[in-house]
Length: 130
Image 1: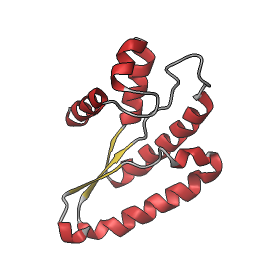
Image 2: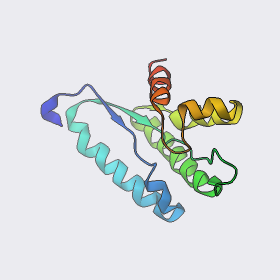
Image 3: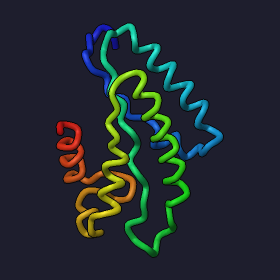
Image 4: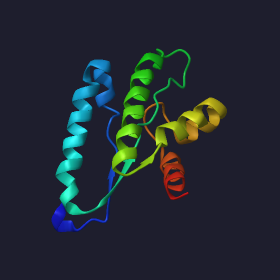
């Protein structure tokens, strides 16, 4: 990575790791800290991005509330870590606010419960550039 001479490194981890639940959080943070330490010699600034929320857009599907609470705990830990090492983009929080306020039809344009749609990626780009 150092040979590429980055000025900013975007770190967006935690979505998959959150499935390990509370028992995996400390190991995740230790690995994240190690990654940051390994990348520090590049001299680049770090931008930490929180994981996307999980939700069931169809009420007939199983609820993802418990899993999303785990994702939120990982997101909170990333905010704490990122605040001390770089800047934080709380993308998970921004999308969570949209989930709580937007009609389901609008959400379906941006988000499929775990993955962004093409329109969702445009929305994320606008959020990151704001």
